[in-house]
Structures are given as structure tokens and as C-alpha cells.
Amino acid sequence: MRFYSSCESWVVLYGGGEKRFASLAALSDSGVNVVAVLLPSSSSGGLRSLVGTLFRGQAVAIMDSSTSGLDDDLSAFEASGILSIGWPSILTRERLAAHPLAINVHPTLLPKYKGPNSGAYVILNGEDYSGSTIHIMEADIDSGAILAQNRVELTPFDTVTSVQRKVYAEEPALLVDTLGRLSGGLDVVEQKSDEGSAYPRRRPSDSIIDPNRPLIDLMLEIRASNPDSFPAYFYYMGEKVTVHVKRLEKGDEEHDMV
Image (cartoon, rainbow, N blue to C red):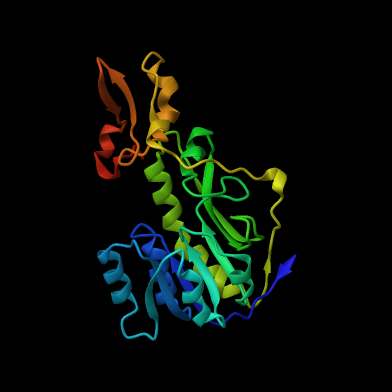
């Protein structure tokens, strides 16, 4: 199916923190007509400062928004399309319908790995690739037609941190290219429900490992456990012991083995 859009301006729902800031910068650098950037009310002052500096001198409204206030905040921009990058809440069907187009940038290869925090499962399932998906937003999370995708190759040494870094590095170019081609039309792919997968949000307790198993059998679990928020761990003599794996030639940078 061929999809066209004449959407000329965008309001960006940006919840990507500093890790995905390059995507926001790419929009500014490429001349995409951004009329507003909404940030979660929980955003740090440092992120607000970065966004303010990025769009300094441009007619871009920079606003904090919350789940309860999002609908009212977006009502002032109904002539513009919605672009979601890491936004932490779901938009209503009515809100999506009020705008000419709403698209989301999801950091896995849909229809697999829908939902938040799915990157760990890419590793746990032994995938050879991950990537980014740009899709039309619908009321059901991560279910709309796919406008564009790119792939990054994974290695047996990738961790949650390094997969995320690889995917986010390629995201800006994909985003700018997709927005630039909307008016000329894109071949879209409808997502098939029987091909999709979704996983629950990871919790610290998901990172417990069995120290009686061979270490080599635990590698997927250790690599899938973010060393900062939920490191792999076990108990020894009543004490919690965390496990971190790295390749010596790579040093300590970003706590990964790549």
C-alpha cells in the first residue's frame, strides 16, 4: 500500500532523554518544521536546557506535559502532525484522530518486540538483528502500519546498553529520510497480529541468575541485564552479588562488551 501525507508541521512528543537527543537535533538541523516540543514533566533540568539551546531563536514552543494534561496541551496544535520519540504514555483514539498524522519511532523491528523496555528480550531470544521502526500511531500500542525500518547487526557480545546505542545511532537518519519522503509517498506494511510479540516491563527481580549453572549458559541472561538499573545477581552466604561481564580490550565504557 502506498501512503502519502502533506503534513507540513510537527509537534514532537519527546521522551527520549539525552540518549536519543541526536534524533531531535537531526530534526532541527534538517529544517523539519517543528512547531512545539513537549517534554514529560519528570524531565531533568539538563534536558530542558539542551532542548532550549537546540531550538534557540526558532519559533518552537517548548513545554512540559503530563499524562493528565497532554490532551489539553496538544489541542493547540491540531493543525500539526504528532511525532513521538520515546513518549511514555498512550494517546487516545480521539486525540490521534484530531491531527492530520501521528507517527512513532520505536526502537525495535516491529511487529516483534512491541511495548516499552523490550530491548532486553531481543538479547534473551538470541536475535541476530535489531533496529528502528517508524509507524503510524493507533490506539493500540505499536500496532500501526510501518512506514520505514532499518536494521543493525548484533553480535554475541552485545548487551542491552550496546544494542540501544547501536539502534539510537541509526535512528536520526531514518527519521529525517522518512519525513522527507512522506509527500512523495511511501510503501507501507500493515502489521499482522500473528507475527507480533510483546513482553512485560523488566524488573530488578528478573535479573536473578542461578549460580549453580555453568557461566557460559548464563551469558544471555547477564548480557540482557542492564548493569545500572537491574544487573544480573545471585546470593552467596546471604549477600547479594552482582555480575558484570566485559571484554578487557574494551575497558569500562558504557558497561558493555562491544
